[in-house]
Image (cartoon, rainbow, N blue to C red):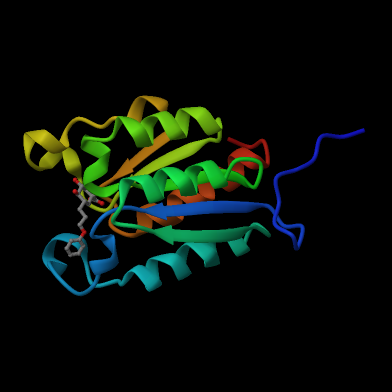
Length: 158
Ligand code: CA2
């Protein structure tokens, strides 16, 4: 008997795309920093990238740390991986780190901006060392790269 594959009810494997605090404002403020794409645009971009691999994407954004932890827990046994832009919680949250470690799913940490070229406090991440990959500074394309990487990983090609 083969082990059950994490999949949606429709039977397709799913990637969770998770966005943290303030990312609901994408495309509406600070376009010089975060670009003009909205969160809906980003989510569609991730869905399109996944569809090319026959995968589904589930998207969730929250400004609340506990809600992000809950969403990570809910991905267990359901998603093949997590694309995570935890926003400012990247630099502060042991709870989100522990949740990612606990679910044992491959995670890709994404940042729209190059956090290493910004303020010192953005240089440290509680997520980088437990992530399979880290993408920063590629703008919203980083989400596409992250989905493609997780799809390739799931197919045994990465
Ligand atoms: O570069 C990234 O993606 C960040 O995760 C964005 C976070 C920041 O705290 C991290 O250091 C780097 C901030 C998200 C704020 O999103 C906004 C989007 C549009 C307008 C205002 C804020």
